[in-house]
Amino acid sequence: MKPVNVAMIGVGCISGIYLENITNVFKDIKLIGVCDLVRERAEQAQKKYNVPKLYETMYDAFNDPEVEVILNLTRPYEHYGVSKPALEAGKHVYSEKPLGASLEEGKELVRLAEEKGLMLGGAPDTFMGAGIQTCRRLIDDGFIGDVVGSAAFMICRGHESWHPDPDFYYQYGGGPMFDMGPYYLTALINLCGGIHSVMSASKKSFEKRLITSQPFAGTEINVSVNTYVAGTIKYDSGAIGTLFTTFDAYYPYQARFEVYGSRGTLFVPDPNTFGGPVKLFRPEDGEVREIPLIYDYKQNSRGLGLDDMAVAIRTGREARADYRQTFHVLDAMTGFERSAQSGRWVRMSTKYKRKKAMVKASLTGVLDE
Image (cartoon, rainbow, N blue to C red; front, side, top):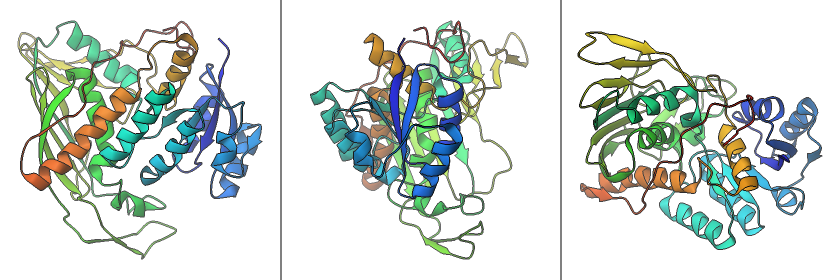
């Protein structure tokens, strides 16, 4: 298959793993250009990874006839402002999460993609890794019986003690649900199916945050989003789930992620990773068993969804991480916000159907199907 040409917009913290994987792991995509508002970042990436082109502005990438896909790695509140003109220029778009910072932004991007017949999708692609795919196989093969519920918790004290530039996590498009919720919700709908409706309560526990990490140590952040979000999910299947995310609590380890079935319980690995461990409890066993991972991509494989999109572009099949998934996740996240404001259940405006499970690759970095 001829590789699909990609231009990267945004060369910040998350770009490093994409650069490594695009240039060294995935064979279906080729990075031909980079662009960043801080030119030095783009220059460093170009030099280190032998990228052919450095664009002065993102519009230069959008107007490059060699570019087929725009990889949008900008900050969450900037996603819409990059993805929209890219689609208008006739480029497919793969974006870091979330799809947009509001439901309205997501709707406009979906409208444009459908109108122009372009692919639109994005992160997270961790659900395509060995951990979540092994969990899906166990559920699909009946190891826990019928899914009756789920519980997922993301608990931490925020980013100001370690991130080099944490302010945007507390502004429009940020907060624990928009930052980490996509990982959990994407995994949940791949395991439990589409979401029918959600309900939530949320709050902002602290009006200000003090940065203690360099280079902005001592700077105060004004918090403009809720940082404590407790949500309930009704799945289309009738199962009930819990999703709790917060930047307000000290917690010593990874919080739990569980799927409950009529015949057992599945302990799901951190959905921010591609690997395990995966654990299963069935009453006849009398103990929790760790299950071997039976799929590829156990390591940090960010860019896997982009590679899958490239194959979809060439073959005409659906991309696994397309907008039908990312928009459903955005619908749920904004639904939690609307529910917290109204005190009522909010029904999803989108429907979700799980995509085809991953197929074990003949060659790592090349997707067969």
